[in-house]
Image (cartoon, rainbow, N blue to C red):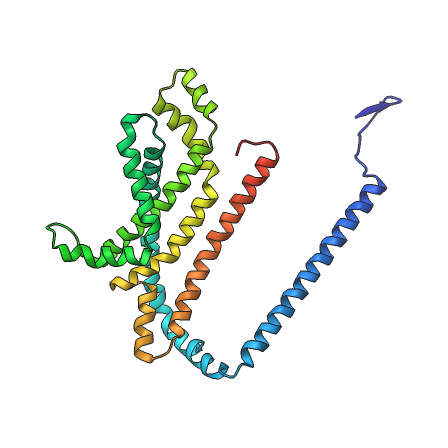
Length: 292
């Protein structure tokens, strides 16, 4: 504000003509890019539609895989089965995060006295990352009950969840370990110089930074876990996939599988977009000079 002949005049920002012209050009360029993207998408979709619907086997494929009647009949049972997949995702996801963190901490411990822990953690991650998930499921679901151990469950849902946890905790452990090792050693040294013990430095200084840095890959692993919960159907657990299989085997129509697949896709898209949003937000913070 400034005074002119005793009258207070409020300063009002007035953009220059050059800036106004630059903003008009930017808006016009954005509208043009949006229009081109929309036209390109419509043209691609039209070409794909024509190619698929004009293929020789399309009538039979439509009847077998895209029957609206079978889709309506299958949807309620598939949704009921999906509830099991969601419960598995929550329980296994929590277990995977805890076990993965413990494995990562064990692999980053220093000193010769911790060598057995490091070796066991490394062997665990190497084995379960190399073992195909489907093989792990078969071994746990059918192998553990065959041992006839007292007090050990034979519930296919619990055993399938255990197999998922074993495999995904190995992947998540490596993600956590990468985050821990990405923290500069000076951070730990500074914490020690302030009087913190090794455990306190790890808990209050290293781990918070490490976890923030690996949030996007962790979310990607949870997205993969969400899809792979459908594999417990091989043990006989009635989830969304097995519910679709039951209906398809009765009617000899594969539309229920398509319904189950679309349900999983609809469930995965929000998590994927959330992962993209978190990644973009962290990139912006880094570009602005933030630590993570």
